Image (cartoon, rainbow, N blue to C red; front, side, top):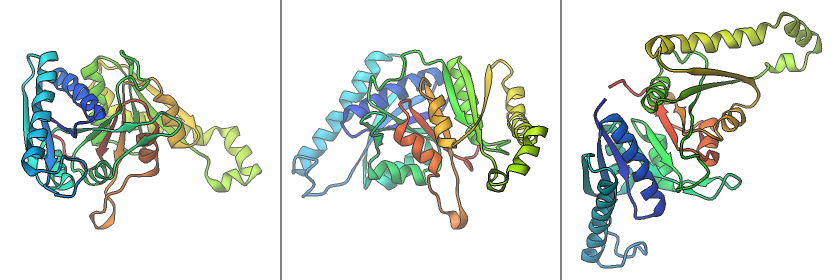
Length: 291
C-alpha cells in the first residue's frame, strides 16, 4: 500500500498527537506523510503575534519542528511540509481530496463533556471528499495496544468504502475487526403487544437483521479471509451501541452520506461518536471512490 497521509497542524498538542498517529499509520501503510498548515494573513488575528513576517516565521518554524520530531521517531518515513497560503477550510478540503486520508487533532475534554470540535474541523468533516481522521490528545484513555478496529455497519452497505476502509485498517494493524450493527423494533410493533408476541415467537425480526449483517459482511470476509471479524448485533440506539463497543478500540470507523443536491452533513450517530469516542475516529464518505 502507498500514497499520502496529510496532517493539518495548528501548533497545538492535539495536532501533534494527530501527527504522531498519522506517522505510525503512514509507516504501517508504506505511505508518505505530509504536514501542512493553512495560513491567511489577518492583521487583527490574536492567534498570531501581529506582524506578517513574524507570523510566517512562526508557522514555518512550527512545521519544521513537527517534521524534525516525527522524522526523529520514524527515520525511514518520507516526511514533507508545506505552508498553504489561504483560508483553512478550502485549503484542507483540497488536501483531503488529494490524500488517502486527512488527519486532524480534536481538542478533548473527556468522555463526559465530549470532544470540542472547532468550526474548521466540523466544516472539513462535512465536506471532505475523502476520509478524515480525528485524533484526540495523548493519553486520552485509549490503550497503547488497542485490540480492535470498530466499524458501524448499516444495512445494505455491500461495496461501501466505509467497510473497505475499516477492513483494510484492521488488516494493516493485524487486529480484530468488530462490525457493530444496532437495530430497533418498528414503532408499530413496539405499540402492539399482540404483534410483538408473534414476532418474538417466530424470532423473525432478529433473524432478518442478523442475516442482513452477515450478507453485508460476506464479500469483505471473502476479500480478507485472514481477518478475524466479530459480528456484534445488538438492539438499541445506534450511537449508544457503537460507543459502548468502542471504549477500548484503537480506531472507530463511521460513514458520512451525501444527500440531495450534493449536500453533505454528519448524521446523528457520526456526530455522537466524534464528540464522545476516546479512540481516533475515521469519517469516510459513502461515495468515496476506491483508489
